[in-house]
Structure formats: structure tokens, C-alpha cells
Amino acid sequence: MQLLDISWFTDSMREGRPVAVETRHHIQDISPTLPEGTTPTPVAAVSQYACQRLTTIENNNKVFTDAFEVLAESYEFSENEGACLAFRRAASVLKSLPRAVRHLGAVRVLPCLGEHAKKVMEEVLECGCSFEVVKICSDEKYQTLKLFTSVFGVGTKTAEKWYCKGLRSFREIIAEPCIRLNRMQQSGFLHHGDISRAVSRAEARALGSIIDEAARGITPDAMLTLTGGFRRGKEFGHDVDFLLTTAELGKENGLLINVIDRLRQQGILLYSSDLQPASSSTFDVNELPCRRRTFSVMDRFPKCFLILRLDGSRVEEGGSGLQRGEEEEEEGDGTGRGWRAVRVDLVSPPKDRYAFALLGWTGSRQFLRDMRTFARRERHMLLDNHGLYDKTKEEFLAAQTEKDIFAHLGLDYIEPWHRNA
Ligand code: UTP
Ligand code: MN
Image (cartoon, rainbow, N blue to C red; front, side, top):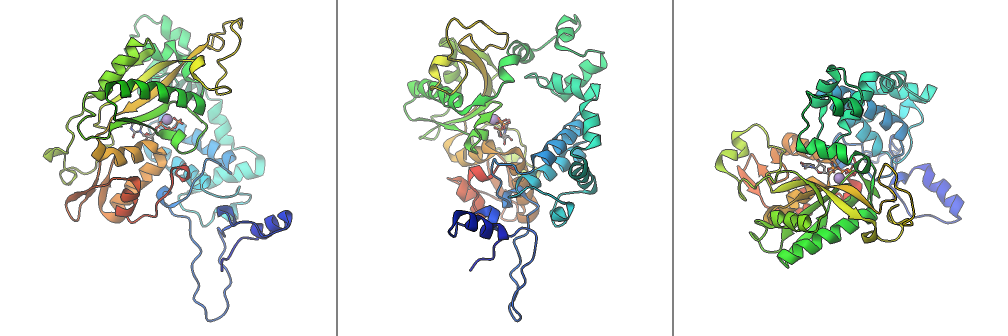
């Protein structure tokens, strides 16, 4: 027997038959009245940790989460990390809800929603928008920092510095003689139009087969996996994230650098960050988490941020807007010239760390942030992209698959498409 929300009944009436039970049919925020003498089974409360919630790509509360994102970003610009994370956490909770919130009463029992967040929601419910958010969006400083940080290689600090110099546009930055752009920023400006356009799944697939071909040409047992938002079921992304490894441990050594060389020979490497070498394939004694307060979130696997040239002819029919007629006039943003630039992240973990790298790079960022917090606070363990350390047992816990990691943490397994926190 299952206790369900009335929406299951109305859906069934509409279909003319009892419909299959879906997540949205489960009761969210009311307690069932049970017959006398029975012990109440508590209604599954919404967890404060994203790694204990199911979050699909369908967001039923976009009006609120968009407003929260503006606030989070504005706090990020003013380096108020606490407030920034609080709004990201609040947005993440609303994203997990199977329905749109229509009145404030519905959020009473939800975790991670502070007074400030509730006030914003109240305004959105009553007036259709939050005045605070509207004000931020029209603020010159916010707009300028948003524009500057949209460039690959430009972070909050650089954007702030340029703003303080009185610069307001790309044109002014390029024309300013005392600004020296690094290699990454030069590429960022050069390909800004292309890389600020979303990448489609078909384009991600096309890049996957190009990199896969290059890797297999070096070692036949190379394995390439699409991670990031695409693995979570998103149809579009801001970049494409890949893990590259080999069936045999140790063979991944030097693979990444060779793959990048091949891409360069093919003439499709538009930019490549300096390759970060693996510090060691196993953990250094001094790196033991018991000697440090927390795990480093930086990857120590060979990793490279790239910009690749993707020809329209490599993308499946209907997958991109690049295969239009030859006679098409060249437009400033690159459409019509038959190719586009795409941001690609390539990481090469050894096979025995693969599950941890896969989990970390699949994200979402908030899902993983909460998973690490859960590990530390609830399990006395440290999790990062390289491993899981049990502080009580003082040992690393091995994992072949993502399921093993969830199991070590005593968490129900959550599929990638439910990790869109
Ligand atoms: P992305 O920033 O690419 O996000 O990082 P995404 O979810 O794929 O979103 P779109 O579609 O590109 O916009 C993917 C995951 O990789 C982790 C991030 O934390 C995120 O969970 N990551 C990224 C790392 O672990 N290390 C890095 O250096 C960069
Ligand atoms: Mn991505």
C-alpha cells in the first residue's frame, strides 16, 4: 500500500486508468492521518543534503531559482562566500521539488531556506519579481563583472581590477595599453562569441569521437567517457567534459599529452592550457587527509582545458546550426562559416581512481559539494575526486564503481540524471 498525493488520483482520472506512480505523486509536505493504534511512518522529509535528494533536469521552480542565482552571483562578486553558498543551496532544494511552489506555506518544512530567501520568494509570489533582484540586474557594476567573467580565463578578481580601472567594455580592455592578457584570456576574447554559445549533445558526441579516435591511435585500450552535465541528461552545456583512461593501470601515463599532440597535428587545437602533471598516482604520505583539515578539491590527475575547432560536417544532422549552405554569409558569431570553437575539459585519472573522478566530474557542483559535506559531517570521512578516506579507520576505501562510493557512505545510490542539484 502506498500513500500518495491527490495528483495521482486526478492524473488517473484524466487517463481513465490508474497511472504508474511517479516521484511527483509522492506526498511532500503533509503528514498522513493514520488509523488509531498504528505507528506513523514519517513522510520522507526533504534532506538538507543534495546527495539524499533526487533532482532531475526539469526545474519546476525556475522563477525562484533564477532569482537566487542572481543573488548568489552578486554575493560571489562581492566575495561574500557564505551568502553566495546559502543561495546556491536554497536554489538546489527548490530544484528537487516535483512541483512549483505556489504559496509560502509549502516551503515551511524545507531545509536550507533562510529568511532572506523566503522574502525573495514572497515577493516573486506576490509581485512576479523580487525588487532586490531587479535592482541588482540593472546595477552597472554587476552587469560589467558578469560581462568580464564571461570571458574564458577571467575570474572575479581580474574582472574587479578592470572595473576599478574604469573599464566597462571589451573594446576598452583590448585598447588599454597597460593590460597584458595571458594566453588563456587572449583565446577567451578571440573565441568569446563561439564559446558563450551553448554546446549541443550532438556536438559533444562529435567531439567525443574525434578524441576517442586520437586516443585509440595511441593505445587501443583507451577509454573515453562523457561526463559533466551531459552525463546528467542535459541537452546543452557550456563546455564538454571527458575522462580518459586505459583498461590497464599505468598505461594512462603520457596518454593525455599525446592525445593533445594529435589534436594539434590535426589542426583543431585552438587553445590548450599547460598540462598539469600527475603529482603521483598514489597518495603522498604528507598528503594524508589526517594531516590536513580537509581534502583538496583540486585535481591532481593530468588535466587540460582546451578550445577545439569543431567542423559542422562532423556533427550529425540536426545537431548544430553549422551545416547551412556554403553561400551563407559569414556572421560575426561564427555561424555560417562551417565550424565553431568549443570548450573541452580532458582529465586522465588512473583506472583505480576512475570511479572517484567520474563521480566528481559528473557533478553537479552542488551535488558533490553536499556529498563531501555529508561524508565529513555524518560519516567522519573525506571525499574528493581522488578517493575516500575513513578518518575513524584511518584508511582509504577502494571503489571500482560509483555505486561502491555511495555504499561506503551509507547512501542510497543516485543515478546521474538525478544529480542535477
Ligand atoms: P562544469 O563546470 O563543466 O559543469 O563541471 P557542468 O555541470 O558540466 O555544466 P555545463 O553544462 O558545462 O554548464 C562539471 C563537474 O566537474 C567538476 C565540477 O565541480 C562539476 O561537478 N570539476 C570541474 C572538477 O571536479 N574539477 C575541475 O577542475 C573542474
Ligand atoms: Mn561541463
